Image (cartoon, rainbow, N blue to C red; front, side, top):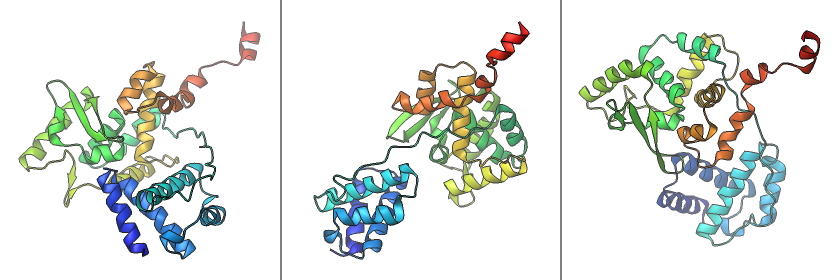
Length: 278
């Protein structure tokens, strides 16, 4: 089987299984990388070939990237050739990384740096509801219920719907945006001159605003989601409720935020302070 035919078959299988465009892109990229590296037909790929590319090209990457690479190869070869060339290869342990968050003060500076009203509203909405970038892009006018002050994220990660609260602070501005989009017969709550926004559009907006605000941390849209969860935790919101708001299926995924609440850590006095100030 030729490389192009194999890649097309993987693409079809992934689409039939209703995988996200990000999963499709990453799985195809991994399999193309393997075949280009080995310069073999798909049927000729062996366990030793996988180990070789891991040792020479993949092993220096983050654990999550290595795990993704192996998952992509395993899925493709089991689906198309009914074999698993990754069998017996140990997966690295995923690194426990502390999520990057902005302080509440940095969030205020960040929001105040916007010069475009629509961009400010959109990014404020991302932070205030903890949206993933794909969720704000796909949020439709019909998904908002202003009478109940709620909205719905449809078919998010894991193909699940979830409810979110419309923040009172943004209510009137969101109503105006809603009406504007309805009058233009726009399907999505936020759109651009060419229609649906891309994640690249939004990432660029966020990056420029952070730079303008003088924030030196590498700020991305997911930083706002991390900040949303951390700030709720600092305000005493139960972590199981935060789990539901974020749309996490497993509480352990949400528990990363119990390690990043720096404001709470800063409130803990050293025992020596108590010893000499008593």
